[in-house]
Image 1 (cartoon, helix red, strand yellow):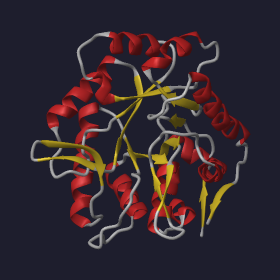
Image 2: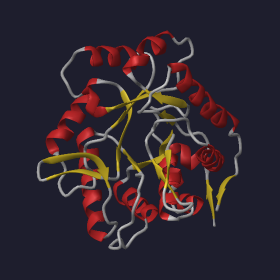
Image 3: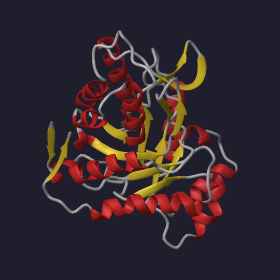
Image 4: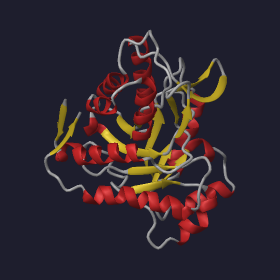
Length: 298
């Protein structure tokens, strides 16, 4: 299977405010090093839920950094796949996006709340027609409230529902087509999910509308031994990006051209220099992308 993507079309559909460079997830412990970096990353990304308070040190740091590097805001609690969208939570996120010049906002294709309860995890759900209608309704509500296009991230999965009538790439493609949202393509999640479910990662990518990718996430994962020679991959964001994910990244960038790319590292957070080294590796891939006839083969 092959997908050809016109570079000019792909570029026109991406969020113009976020540069097609490599960025890092901001951690407060790195504030000093990041502030003093003479060549800072192309952008930083923060989790929206860490900045929903009114003030204090988090906002003081974010305000200073937002004036220096482009900002991406990544939500982890809107529960896009849930039965009901938390409107009060959405209002707080909209206020945050109004407070800072965020170039991009993204959320996950998952659910985490139900009947007023928050579960603290990004949980899967069956991909069927009812879920598709629900997610499209929620994505549209979010975009209307924040006043611009959002990006929807593919999840990391460890099981598949027998009740699903659509494959995940088809589901995502339908949401994009019906709502006009973009994709946040997490390539570590693609690798983790396809390994765990016995799927082909390149076939997964070939089924996505890659020209609608507005940002890419790269992260590390843990490997857990199961019975026999089987392994389970766990999306823990606690280590360097692995070679298999770098390989997928190189293929995607060769296919669609430079895309804003984030290095995620949320557990066992290393020194700033380690994150910057990972971002520089991603930047090298972006810089090397010069093809005008980009294809992704699977």
